Image (cartoon, rainbow, N blue to C red; front, top):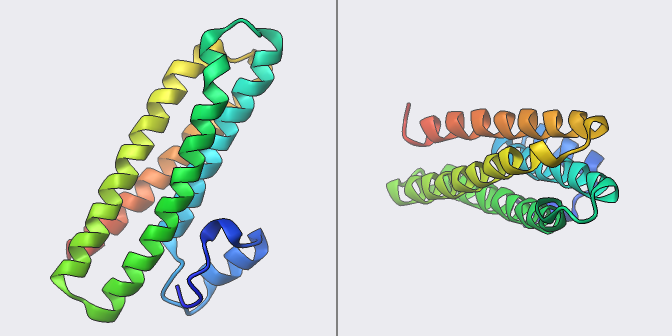
Length: 157
């Protein structure tokens, strides 16, 4: 990123403009990180609202903090992707490509963790919060597709 601002510090409209600009980064990888963070946030909301109806449910009790942690890590991954992609575009070196791929693999592990959380938490979620779980799954899948494509590109595919 030219200004090295954290993705978390952008206003939504400014992030949209930055992604849509001619700047090298932020780009699709950052969008994937944000999507994963939104997925975690939607799941966290479903859990916290459901917890009001089931305050003694231990799965729901721990879910909001776990979801918030995934969301924080997703934004950190978005920043890392943005920085590594900018470096790759600058140098086109094998080392920069390897770091970009490593970033993608860390992101994939985080996404896998979130999907496991969705699977764990979903049976405990109130029916009126099912839409938030659907959003969490859809956003997590969108993030997976984006990162898979980015990884193919970094590997030269």
